[in-house]
Image (cartoon, rainbow, N blue to C red; front, side, top):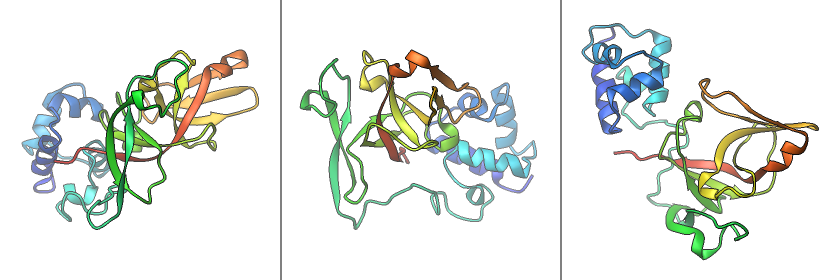
Length: 215
């Protein structure tokens, strides 16, 4: 094993307050023992696996190999210092028929750079988008719009009776006779809607950025 990789994997995992069990699940290992052996540097990590660890730990392969500090050159990591900022609403539960951005729907406000085109944000739930580097608990910034280009990530409501707080975040593919909502995790199969079922799918906005907790 390249010296120190296991130590940096453990350090980064602990920075994220992630358990060995959680990391094992993200990496596709059957148990935490595999992670424990790697962190104790008793097991080698192949080059391809280093890339997977970097994605799961929201860092870079270069950092895990000791070539850079933890947060250098991470895509979508936007520093706020020295920039003009504004606040947008983090939405909570939305009552049926209530406009999305009505005051009673706002859970709190989130600061973002003034030049980031977003109208509101949602808290991500689950791990269906981890390969797009969007993790459970991340804040996803949404530009409100009723349609997106094929392949773009969007916040989508399935059936108008759903709450916006339960919106699903997926890659959207719209065809003449069907809509496909695709996850960024092979453990989650695509969701397909055809015929009248297409009317159940409502795009509420395009994902333009995300905010992860970094300690």
